[in-house]
Amino acid sequence: MSMDTKAALSVEEYLHTSFPDLDKEYRDGKLVERTLPDYLHGRTQLLLGAFFLAVSKSLSMWPSSETRVKIRPGVYLIPDVSVFHPNRPGLVPDSPPFVAIEILSPDDRFPAVEKKLEEYRTWGVKHVWLVDPHSKRMYTCDSVLTEVATLRIPELGLEVTPADVFES
Image 1 (cartoon, rainbow, N blue to C red):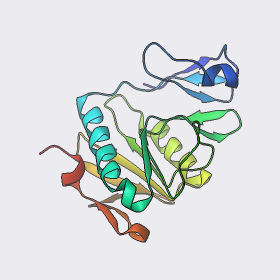
Image 2: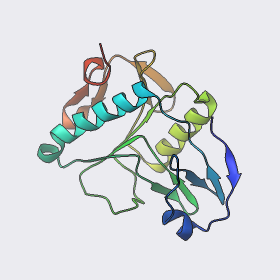
Image 3: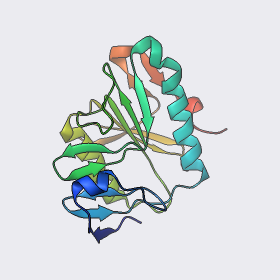
């Protein structure tokens, strides 16, 4: 479950802090705890990362996992998987990735997840995806959340199928 806690840290301190458990997001002066991933979440995240890593050199992509991104001053979010294209990002990216993927965990609260997806979209992320490893469903987030059979990046000729990311 995501919880806001009072931040005793400035943005600069946040960016140089390692948390003993799971990394936290930073929203307008507050630390935000993230839900703990389970095996299916971690496995799906690894498989998505491996998919993008396999095509990264030929398509000028820079995939990363759980990388803090600066959405706007004072707001840092952590997508489960980010894919940058065509340029390599800085250490703390402040330009939208080409793809931002959130993977559902059992304790996620759907309204909070939808808000985060909308923030990515509003920020300018071209492809915002939600993947649910428990129901084996995939969604795109344009103006609405839409369930899809495959996740596509038509401008690069890429397609991510359920076989690419879900265990059989």
